[in-house]
Length: 510
Ligand SMILES: *[C@@H]1O[C@H](CO)[C@@H](O)[C@H](O)[C@H]1NC(C)=O
Ligand SMILES: *[C@@H]1O[C@H](CO)[C@@H](O)[C@H](O)[C@H]1NC(C)=O
Ligand SMILES: *[C@@H]1O[C@H](CO)[C@@H](O)[C@H](O)[C@H]1NC(C)=O
Ligand SMILES: *[C@@H]1O[C@H](CO)[C@@H](O)[C@H](O)[C@H]1NC(C)=O
Ligand SMILES: *[C@@H]1O[C@H](CO)[C@@H](O)[C@H](O)[C@H]1NC(C)=O
Ligand SMILES: *[C@@H]1O[C@H](CO)[C@@H](O)[C@H](O)[C@H]1NC(C)=O
Ligand SMILES: *[C@@H]1O[C@H](CO)[C@@H](O)[C@H](O)[C@H]1NC(C)=O
Image 1 (cartoon, helix red, strand yellow):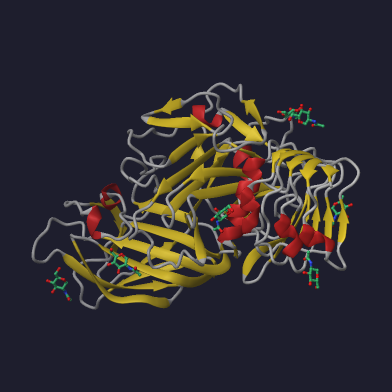
Image 2 (tube, rainbow, N blue to C red):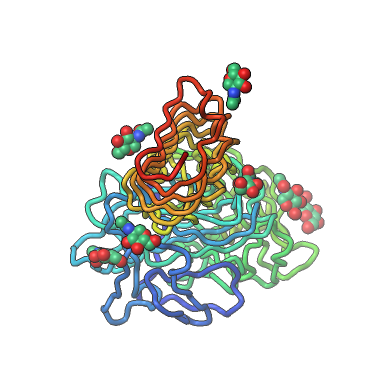
């Protein structure tokens, strides 16, 4: 939905490694063992995903992390999810990396969607980068509402072959980072993050950036200044790496001359953006080492009379409307002896979250999924969202919180048992688990006050019929034939009117 073709790319043939101690998860998709690149250890993805097939890339010279991938040939699944442990209510930087490498024998990579925490995040289209021998990465900042972060791929109308993924990184952020955004309602999707005045290929990343962000080099031919003093990262809410302040760009020299940056380099889709700009007076600290200038974005004042010292400053706008080309203009104060300077900038699209599923339903569905031996392939991530990518057999209403209203896994060959956690699905009206291979007892469902239709026929369920089913006011249909139930039919049933109860053949009930 959100085109992010502006995102920069990782060079396939050489990205610097970083020192150990990076927190969170660096996951190499399709890998069968750990891969150490530089000082970063990438772990195999088996414990985070239960679907898909793996492929190894044989091309020599490809970065180890990009040399394996996981792809998803099952066309019936509504999504393919990675679920990564997280701390509840913490913000995470999530990066997905894609390098097609012709793994399926085709000549062009497939186009598909990526989903983060139940919100459609963007389309993944890596064709342009792939043609130039590059991998593509996407990055977002999102809040973990519960104790995990889910990142899913899904087919869309343009998908012609199997979606795939090469790497997934999930890094915790400190509270103050990007804290002007309300992450209960929005995610941020990175468009550009640049370190000005740095040259060529060397991006600043971990360990320079302890949150594993990439600050790509950008100079655009403008005069470069070198800093004579270091800043304290701690002074900035967003904790930019000290390295990005080492250089900056300025004007060619004329007194009063404005600095104009065409940044980010590519035109933007119309949307709201989070924009952060970082500055430092590059001279040696001293009583006169400060400079004052105005900052404008597309001719509109972003900040007037900014006084930048050697300690550095940051400006941000948390929901700035932008579209097309963007121009950042720094205009020195009248009579200023020195020109403006800028060191780094970040631009992220503000993405409204596509709703939330009632936590109780998430807990209930997760419990059911755990109880089944072989739930459908898409039973991971959010059970209801995004709309159109709910779990197979699950129907939800959407507003204001998504609720599970029906479950139908008829003839899915599902084994295992029906979890007690089903009692959390308090908005459900219809449960059909017909013709599976389910064993164990029928759990208590007396809290499911909206339940009208319960079909459990043709399984291998044992135990008694819970008497509480007889006192559920809305229950109209109870089908349990062809199981191995026993005991007495609860007395409460005999009196119910307008109630269809089928229990024979196949049980031992009296
Ligand atoms: C993917 O793996 C499944 C089982 O793990 C296998 O049945 C299927 O044939 C594989 N598909 C492809 C395209 O290799
Ligand atoms: C962001 O974090 C900083 C530093 O902890 C704090 O001073 C500021 O009030 C926070 N802003 C918001 C909107 O929470
Ligand atoms: C800018 O800040 C410095 C201290 O860092 C101060 O000495 C100077 O007077 C300020 N300049 C203006 C124009 O406010
Ligand atoms: C459940 O699915 C089966 C098979 O697709 C169908 O026959 C049945 O009508 C469905 N039940 C409901 C309540 O929709
Ligand atoms: C979910 O169901 C289980 C088992 O009935 C129960 O222990 C738990 O408290 C429920 N959780 C919620 C949030 O309702
Ligand atoms: C049902 O599950 C049992 C093990 O619990 C297994 O032996 C049997 O093959 C399964 N039947 C079907 C039809 O899947
Ligand atoms: C059946 O219903 C009648 C009237 O509604 C009630 O008096 C009686 O106690 C009920 N019997 C049972 C076994 O629930």
